[in-house]
Length: 189
Image (cartoon, rainbow, N blue to C red; front, side, top):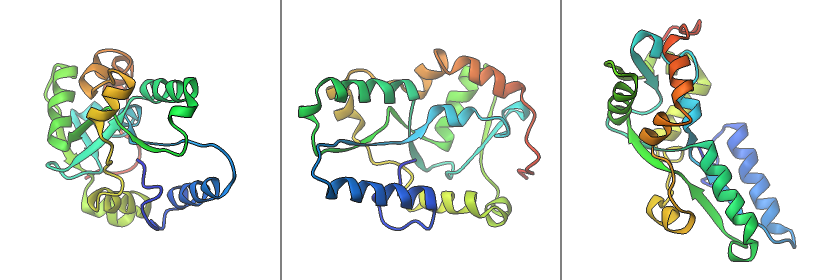
């Protein structure tokens, strides 16, 4: 969820990345900055409700957010390291797919072979948990929703996994585990 470089977020981990990027740009060095979207692997963390046949996350049901598999991050970075001169001075937003909450519902239902209902984290939880609340605000205003040009990335770096293909491959064991992992102590309702 790359909010780095998109203004002050009041979230230390994003704002510190922005400061690091600014510092790197001020140095007399060659650099390429890579800003990945939300990790597909993060979607499979226990406690998101999959064991209850629902999925709770940050965006509204009709709101899009970009995601990327960590394997594809490695693939892109390896290509950059293999041809550094072609990428010097670039800042790349990277993602392999863009999904809405309702897309997540459909994709997860298909992969789990059972109905999964998507819900945004409840307003009460977002109000009580300042970290999640602020992340949801940053998704809502677009700073954490992603702005990668996925088509251009595929042309430059080859095929990148969609959430569907990731769930059929490297994400399958994570999905199976999440479907059986009990909800964390955080009340999602």
